[in-house]
Amino acid sequence: MAVKMRLARLGDKKSPFYRIVVIDSQKARNGSYIDLVGTLDPSTNPATIKIDADKAQHWIACGVQPTDTVRDILKKQGIIKTK
Image (cartoon, rainbow, N blue to C red):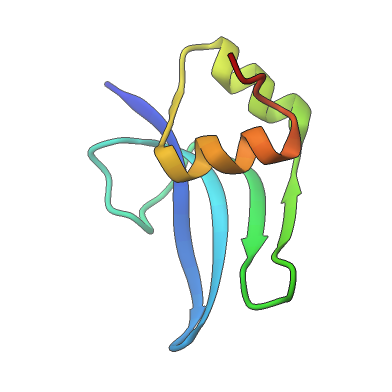
């Protein structure tokens, strides 16, 4: 079972809202997830990002692979160190 940290889309048409979740990679985008790590609201200017840093670091330490988009968000928040 490959576990990933990725975005799950919520919100209405043309007003997206995302949850950053830890989920099995074979489940659907909005399927049941293991843990909720944070939220992303791109409709505000600048985008509102709320992440529980302790949860994110814990899951990354457990071997969860974030998707490219989530990795960029975590780098901007200072949760993942750049090499």
